[in-house]
Length: 393
Ligand SMILES: *Cc1c(COP(=O)(O)O)cnc(C)c1O
Image (cartoon, rainbow, N blue to C red; front, side):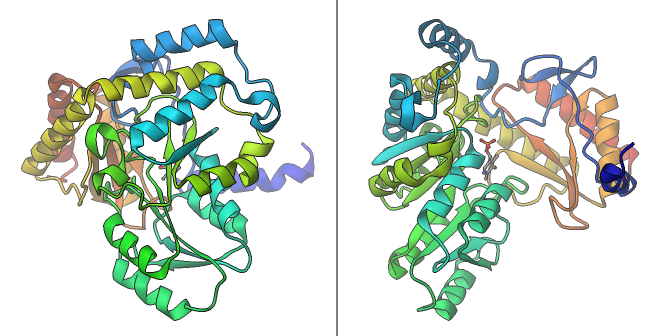
């Protein structure tokens, strides 16, 4: 084999030796409470399909109809000839759903961050970023060329300290945070961050990928949860988690949204999501606007599971959302736990360093409205059995 790939072989081997290689399981079925994984039927606690919309008949129907009406592709980037009336409709529906001034959509939550941050700040500017922010926020910050200051996780007092230290050192500034932090399920103190951003007159941005469809009235997200309508300049979201489809969104201040149509590079230089995707996203908003039932079920399921796991004696961290981290400590234990669960028909992956700090390995249980009470009881039974087997409880 050619020598120029030797380093890749070496690095891959290294990852495998350290137990850090991503072994990717293949699904042979649609997303749902139950999955076919590597040929066996297992109960799913890994996906971000919080509301069970990924395979919802209403969304599937909407996508099929759009396929007939608009075909499979958008045909060009949106500024040239790739904006269809359903793309515009989705943006109106997002703004209306979230009670925001305006909204714009992107190919994914990841690209929404890459589009937004560099459009707002540059080399003469500063970004104040929560130390546990998502990779796509970090990449967007780096791409902007702005100076990045990290503040302690969910700590407004520390943010203020860092801001004071840097007063006068920048042209413009941006405070950026995840809404719900996906590894612990904790929620950013957005009300406090707003007070600070407002006092210093700097931009405030929240990436609510895990709060979209989960927090707020009927899943309207973190801005609604804190009743900060019209106060948070930029709310990033994704259609790929609770909404069950794919795509990203930015809602908030109308100036910012208009600016992104002119300077958001993934908007200008990459095609939009396909018509069936867009129609399915609109279908998700239809379902959420009609009833809060799915969101209510998600929270009831999460509360039940967390209460029972704590009663069994597991350490389930400090989650404020249905995300349930089962804290195990060492990566090896978390991996063994996950394997034992899988043998018992429970699919819940272990998460270790560098996604979470050393010594804080865990199994992250993703609860969904799609789970029945029986599903939750079966998983509790298996968690208890494995927990005893491995001496965790
Ligand atoms: C998942 C996630 C994203 C990426 O969303 P996609 O639509 O899957 O690209 C961005 N930000 C945060 C905080 C996320 O959790």
